Length: 123
Image 1 (tube, rainbow, N blue to C red):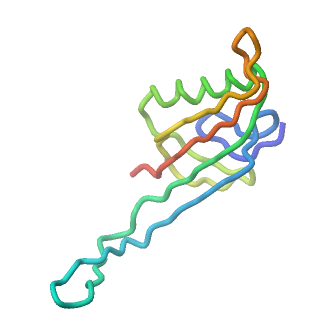
Image 2: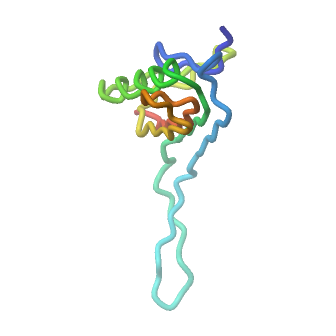
């Protein structure tokens, strides 16, 4: 199975691949309001990076993979993030997992499930 990314033991790829990866880095700059003048720039230190992965999956197998992510959230621990070429991104915490079930069958199984996971660096 092709691996796009691994978060701890959880592997993204194959039947649970992400379609979008959004990465955000903060330079640590804030603006301080000054009366009768332009705001002043102030450096507070680099912020933590965030990553948002979004994808689609199908059927009960995909629903089970989303539940695995929810179980990882409940562990309340950071996980090592490694990309598909073996580059270690460091430790990350899971902030959010969301899903949107579509075309749900009578037994509650979604024939299409769109999911999002939001990660933040952990220091």
